[in-house]
Structure formats: C-alpha cells, structure tokens
Amino acid sequence: MKKEITASLKLAYPIILGELAQVALHLIDSAMVGQVSYYHLGASALANNIIHIPFIMGMGLTIAIAQMTSLYQGRHDHKNVSHYFFNGMFIILLASLIIATALLFGKDLVYNMKQDIKVATLAEPYFKIIAWSLIPALLFFGLKQFTDGLQYTKTAMALSLFALPLNVFLNWLLIYGNWGFPRLELIGAGIGTLLTRVIIFVLLLILVLYHPLYKKYKLIAPRAWKLSKKTMRDILSIGIPSSFQLTMEAGAFAISGLIIGSISAISLASHQIALSISSFTFMASVGLSQALSIRTSNAYSQNNWVKAGIIGKSGLYLTALYGIFCALIFLFFRFPLSSMFTQNEEVLQLAGYLLILSAIFQVPDTIQVNSSGLLRGIKDVKVPSFIVAMAYWVIGIPLGVLLAFKFNMGAQGIWIGLIIGLTISSIFLTRRFFNTINRNKM
Image 1 (cartoon, rainbow, N blue to C red):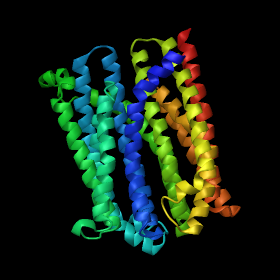
Image 2 (cartoon, rainbow, N blue to C red):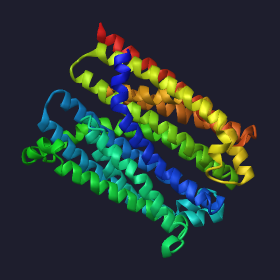
Image 3 (cartoon, one colour):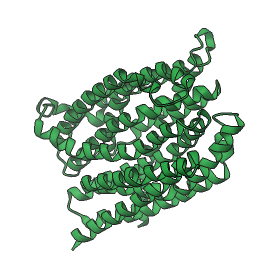
Image 4 (cartoon, one colour):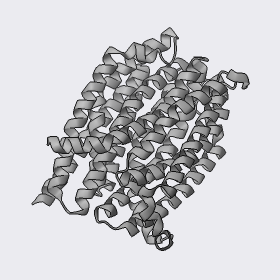
C-alpha cells in the first residue's frame, strides 16, 4: 500500500501543481479585480460562470489524449501513441474554435441571466476576451495531457507555474494602469489572461516538437500523423462521456452561481469567493485523479486487475486524508482567505459561511472525483457520467433551489443541495469501481 501511495504521489504532484496553477489564473483575476470593487468581482464571476461550462466540456475531451497515450505507452506502441496524439490535437483544435465562436455569438447571455445590470455591463467585454483565450488554453491542455500520459509530468507543471507571475505582472500593468499602461480594470484582467495562455501554449508546443524526450514520436510522424475516422471515434468514445461527466459537475456549480446571482450582487460576490477557493483545492484532487487514471490505465493495458485495485484503494485513502486537511483549513482560515478578495463586510460574512459548507463537502468531493478518474482508467465512462448527472441535476440542484427560495435559505440553500448531490455521487462511483475490480479479479 505504501509503495503504491508513493508511486501515485510521484506521478501526481507535478500534475497537481500544474492544475493548481491553472486555477490560480482565475483566482488572480478575481483577487486583483476585487480590489477595484465588488461589482467588478461579480462581473468576473458572471462571465466565468457562463464560460466555465463550455471550457470544462473542452477540457473533458482532452482527457482522452492522456488515456490513449497511457494505454499504448503501456504496450510500448510508439506509433499509436504518436497517431492518437495527432488526431486528438486535431479534435481539440476544432472543438476549441467551435466553443469560442459559439460563446462570441452568445455574448448577450450576460444580460439575460437576471443579474445586476451594472455587473452585466462590466462583464460583456471581459467575456469576449476570455472566450478567445479558450483556444490557446484548450490546446495547451491537449499538449499537457499528452506529456502527462507519457508520465513526463514536470514539463507542463513548470510552464503552468511560470504562468502565475506572468499573469500577475500583466494584470498589474493592465488592471491598474502601471508603467504608463492604460487603466483597463476588468478588461485588463481578460487581456492578461489571454496573453498568458497564448505564451504558455506556444512554449509547450515548441518543447513537444523539439525536445529530445519526444523525438521518437516525432520521427515516426510521417507514418503516424494521419487523420483517421476510427481513431477519432476511439478518442471521442472516451472524450465525450468524460466531457459530459465533468460538465455535469462543473455546470452544476456554474448554474448555481447564476441562480445565486439572481438573489443579489453581494450573494454572487460571496459565492464567487467561496467557489474560487474551493476550486483551488478541488483541482489538486483533479491532478491526483489524473495520475490515478494514468496508472490504472497502464494496469488495464496489461490486464492486471489486482494492481488496478491496489492503486485505487491506496489512492482513495490518500484523497480522504487530503479532503480532511482542506476542510480544517477552510474552517479555521475562512475569513483570512475571504479577505484576499474583498474588504466589504457583508460579502466577507456570507463568504465565510459558505466556506464552512465547503469544508463539509471536501472529503466526499475528493473521493468522487478520484473514483471518476479510476473508472476512466479502466475505460468505464458512460455509466459514471449518468451517475454524476443524476446526483447533481436530479437531486442536488433542485433540492438547492427548493432550500434557497422555498425555505428562504438563499445562497446557503444552493450549497447544501450541492453537498447532498456530490455525496451521493461519491458513494455510487466508489462502489462501482471496486465492484468492477472484484468481478474481473475472479
């Protein structure tokens, strides 16, 4: 057990740092524009809540690249590793262009969500810039999934960490108008994020094309880099259910933000603070989930169900401990954490209460996201997607709306509904993984 935990952590920690760095870009935007006013913070929340769902859809598609890369790497089939990488990146390019274009045509959504009109007006130009930034962001994630699938996880981690000071510096110039640059406030945050995403994508692309680590995959490019309908179907058979599953969860929180925004601008700003902090810890779970998924995929490629089961059990012990740690941090430091985003007393008090609720769901949340990753590793994606959809959209959100408006619990009611939904999801996903392992070990 100890050996498997160590192996999983060794693979996971660069992925975790990379994922945390990506979420930190949104935290940086929120924290820096929150110093302008809570209306700007609310506008950032509104735009990101709308964009988050299609962004997660695109990210879900990229997961298939890591899965297929890991599968064929386990079989020492370099040609298919290269072939699936090429076809996967083509799918991501096409998907990112479609998503960005659809968002640009739908920019008026910010005015149709029953939000404060000042918030909506501030959100529109920021929304358009962030929509464009999804193209380099998704292409970067596609390359990252390829390098992670090969277990070269430090490459993308380094670039993701580099993105943080770069984004802070660009925001400092463009939000506040330093060094003679115009004071663009929220628009400046959008431009800073767009430039950061373009730069790290280009750098990772150069590394993949020219670094010696990836030379053997490039050398066979003339034979491997060909578009194939069958290969694309293989990728989409994993990518679409994975995308659907992630979208069901992320979409639940994004829609919840829009519902909370209809209560008041203060409720929306408080929700954004609590969600931003929760998302930061959640992405560490996502990073571990990807590592566990890659390791179980390797075991699956060798038909080693015993090893897959051990990886899963050790991984879930680890995630439970992590969830407890996060819960304690949220409980004891909720107000210092919230004060990084705003000094408005009403927003601080509500955000602190929402962080107490967030602390409650840390353990089931970490367990359910890692159970999902383990199931992806053994190529079980369709039924888990259905489980997540039912838990959030049939139980969690309707119950949250009932508590928020029928029982006058406001934003707190929405969060309680989500806690119940993700707890149900964690129980059923974990049971499904171990039932599948036990059946195949016989």
